Image 1 (cartoon, rainbow, N blue to C red):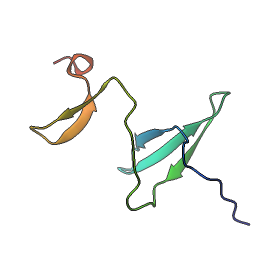
Image 2 (image 1 turned 180 degrees about the vertical axis):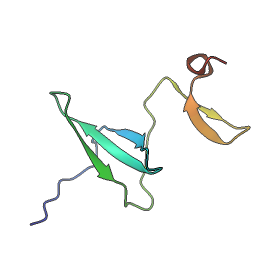
Image 3 (image 1 turned 45 degrees about the vertical axis):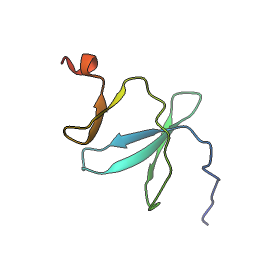
Image 4 (image 1 turned 90 degrees about the horizontal axis):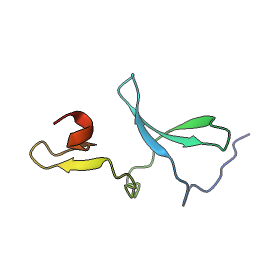
Length: 70
């Protein structure tokens, strides 16, 4: 039986896996988590991470230069 729960407003982490794919990880209050495959073709995302920086020379999103040692 398939169950579904609305995802609107859920906070989680976009993770890059060792398999070279992205997943959406949602943590619970006890520190456990569930990883979800991303099948949505045009999901709206808001970045809420002070360590996130856009690098326009490489058109990439990564950690802050200080975090990366640059």
